[in-house]
Image 1 (cartoon, rainbow, N blue to C red):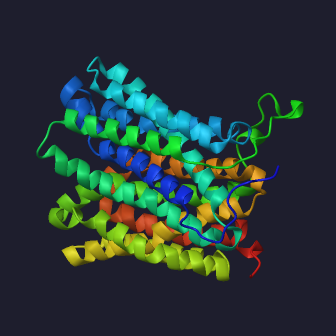
Image 2 (cartoon, rainbow, N blue to C red):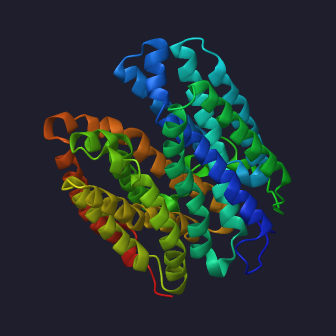
Length: 394
């Protein structure tokens, strides 16, 4: 299959910028609610702690289903058409949050909203892989992944800030407006792409139709990275309360985003000029150091230093890994490779809180973060054996 995407050497084309904004809006939408929806379920429907956690987690389950299903059909339908469908569904399912029916209904809404989110982000990730110039693939994907980082950092911050002044219905309304804007951007995006109909041998169910086997090794690394990150995303506020660092924790993700914005373009260029190992090995080390600094944080500056190291570690590790997932496959598999990458990340983020929750109450959050640092040291060698040792220098 011939990809007819723009092959110009410029990264920030009109299509790239619109795709960046669309992905940012979708992620901002998701993270606006992720820190609020569990407490909403408890207040509105008297949900138990486990049920409230399920309300938050089912979004990830829906997202996984969306990624898994649509990874096969992007080539035959075209990434823009799939994105339009995904953003339309995202807007429609965002309206359902206004219906205060029952806890069961809210759980169904979370799955459907997550499903459409998975379609959207798989499409935007695939588009980024198609339209970024080959000579600047690492730098381009690093820039694009900032849209996810900014959404993940600004969403929780903005959600908690708005909830202090407005009801959650106002936030539901903002989510709908953001999803509607994303849909409009998808409509105006122009992605020249030659679709290919599935052959008779491709019909039916085969795991290879949904997952790119070449991208599985890097997806394993991303799974561990996502699981580790879930310990921060879900427990950093509680940890900050224990250490009397609430004020500093409010800015933790902002520091993470700021450092990511500064570091990612440089790391992208480093990958293009050398190889992914030049970025991933240091990123894993920074990521491990992040957890050690957090574990021993008793002052605000140490916790914020952990946020900065998170940007150098997790931020660069995920963006470079996404570039690698696209790099190791032929162009006709970019959509499946993107889906495979996000499946690994979502599995880590989705199941991480449950896995970590099995022992955090016994060992404490500080010790949990030390264990995450040890896990990342092990990941350093896992990466070497499953991918790093095979990488050729540019």
